[in-house]
Image (cartoon, rainbow, N blue to C red; front, side, top):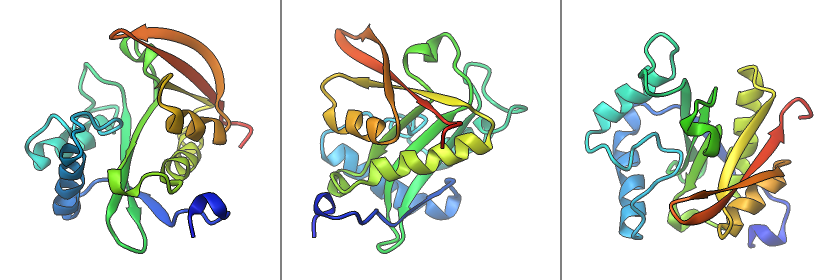
Length: 184
């Protein structure tokens, strides 16, 4: 049964990247590339880093205020693991603050494995991330989305996102949505 026809939610769990997930992570990245996608949103540059070990070190360092890269903000990155298939089906990050660069990109980015799209995974990932954000003391999240990315707009709205403003980036118009966390 298609998830669109039922109320069944995807059975996923957000987990921090580990060395044990290396092969599954590389397979996840490879699938994006095989689908012609060179950018993996929410991946903290996993799409640009050849060495999983280097990327993992950066992810761990950037999750700690004492070791965060001076050009970044504290960021938690999570893989979404499908509890049935035990595969990585998505990636999502949480930026605890917004610097000048991030004001138009928001607190969160996410991607879903191409062969697992349209199953409610992004909606469930964002829902779970909102709980993590609340536990981290955030009262709201800002998320940006290109206006032609209808699936992501639906994901944001299903999680309480309300349109805030638009901006131009690389010749495209994008919108910022705000999700108030204290109402969760």
